[in-house]
Length: 156
Image (tube, rainbow, N blue to C red):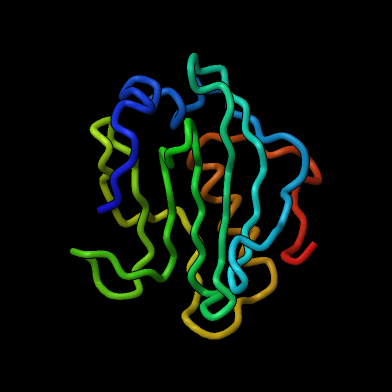
């Protein structure tokens, strides 16, 4: 289980951020880049009305060797208050299971199996529109409003 900065985000802030009370809005367009030579990432800035958590980002990354493993994070104060791993192995879950994590203020995180993320079939290719569908489902579950025209395809 990853450890993040303890106390970086309070329990009450997490509850607000992961609700419509956070008034979270993404700004601009999703920007793609190389995280590592074989890994692409996309980021978009997020602004909220939560004190000490006003700026953050949504980040998605995909390794070229396993495009069916999509990772999305809602980062605030450099910690993922919520993150998604599709088709990824996690202790306590079946292999290749899509799951989400929520940051806990002691620096740990809890994990659960979601029912709101589109299925991503295992395989060496991903159908057009899959990354966007997963990204939008994750943003919706985190109550983040995405602006019109925000999406750009990988590699742009």
